Amino acid sequence: MTYLLFSLGLVMLFVGGEGLVRGASSVARHFNFSPMLIGLTIVGFGTSAPELLVSVQAALAGQPGIAIGNVVGSNIANILLILGVSTAIAPLFIPARRLWRDLAFMLAATAIFWAMLSGSEITRLYGAILVLGLLAFLAVAFLYGKIDADEDAPVENQLLAWGFTLGGLVVLVIGARLLVDNAVIIAKTFGVPEAVIGLTIVAVGTSLPELATSVIAALRRQTEIAVGNVIGSNIFNIFSIIGITALITPIPVDPRFAVIDMPVATAVAVGLAVAAILLNGLPRIAGVILLALYGGYLWAMA
Image 1 (spheres, helix red, strand yellow):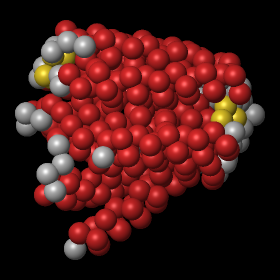
Image 2 (cartoon, helix red, strand yellow):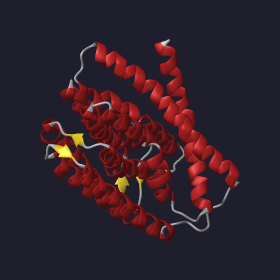
Image 3 (cartoon, rainbow, N blue to C red):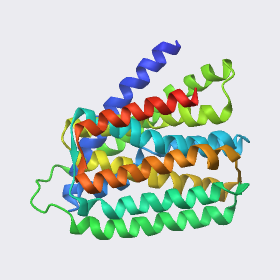
Image 4 (cartoon, helix red, strand yellow):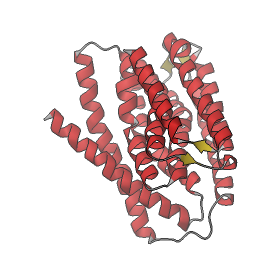
């Protein structure tokens, strides 16, 4: 039964990803928004829904290691695993002018989160600060999303487009949940520590919607959606998921996150920003390098 549910979840992920990419790209054209904006918001935030559910549930259940580890591990997986796989499939080249603002927000969110993890608890005040950061990001994203839009792109039926978009998100979330629940149960039976479960199994599992969506977007040559999905998800993970979770209940902090895991997450984010700006995106060889680095990270966690 476990293998059947796993297989069903995997199929749902890629079916949902195909629907989400197709629908979101059409929605972007209809509202004269750039595909990057849709990737950063509807796609990036929508595919992060599993992380929000998992982190809130974990914090309320007294499992802060999973709540924080889920976000930190997801942000690492988003860049090394998801962009790695997507770039290995198809080079992701985007003009630097469309990336620098969003990369700056991602780096700022990462730095703020690291500073908060240096204390003993992420308080409700910290949560409010993070949510305000999310609102600031959304304001800037929508302001420049209109400017970067392609006004000549064709528009499809919007009822169908929204159906694909919302339906794809629902299917993605359900599919990811099927995979994550079974993986966590298996890991606990082998005595894997809570923080490690959050950083690896839960983080990768809840990042599966991003993986499916970015891979489908890369195959369809929707480069801006593939990249925007990852950057938007990383921003949402910190500003919204940790922010909302902390507003609901303060989150105790395991010292290992500030000392071990956040330096990795920060180095990965900075490396992505530097490479993307200097190269106007990511060549295929960068995808291979990212995957190798993620393999090394998982080996170190083991």
